[in-house]
Length: 292
Image (tube, rainbow, N blue to C red; front, side):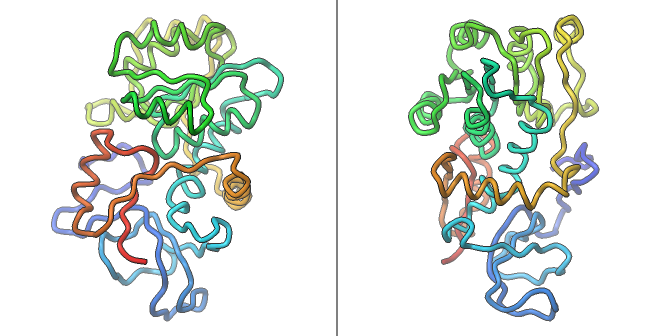
């Protein structure tokens, strides 16, 4: 929403222009050779409208059978958030089955973090610990998604809770938030660990470059412990997206990955749902259902 989004692949929303974001729906009329009426399509530039005209180049055809007809999954676990989780863990996490690794995920009850933690478990992490913003989210992570433990950063001291949840330290950190929470995690990381720098949402409204600068203590911890921390952007791995979607859909159908969604009905409620999401009101992917 800032004039400078801080990301070369994201343009800011324009005043007096229709807001857009990720969407999925059905083709009702087509003048494109590659798309037919009744095809299901998704786009990162979906207008917040019940109907709209879109350029074929902005649309990607999807196959509903991959998600057993749950087409909203293409916006979350079997879409860009899921791909970000999968490729982040696989490309930057260096998870090794049998290595007795502990993974910590911040923003763990969101669309990306909830999948990332489950992938860490599937790929062989001995412990997966999530950081989130409510006791209910903590309960869902542990009881529904199979996380080993969860920390509510709004209750008590994060560093103390992490020490209790990660008795052997932290080997892999999937970072969605940045700021003091990430400082606390990195302080407890083991030598030769890996930070998956996925997002820094606590820092986005600050007038600093991306990735935002770290405090001296955290920089020293990264250096002295030989911890890797490189910017990760899922769009840099386009050649792996198709295989990734197939893998994610297989895990979802088999029940190895469970999907979290918060669904609100009606386009008239999009603003309320968006503001709720920005305050942490969602568990999993925030979905607005426009029609059947």
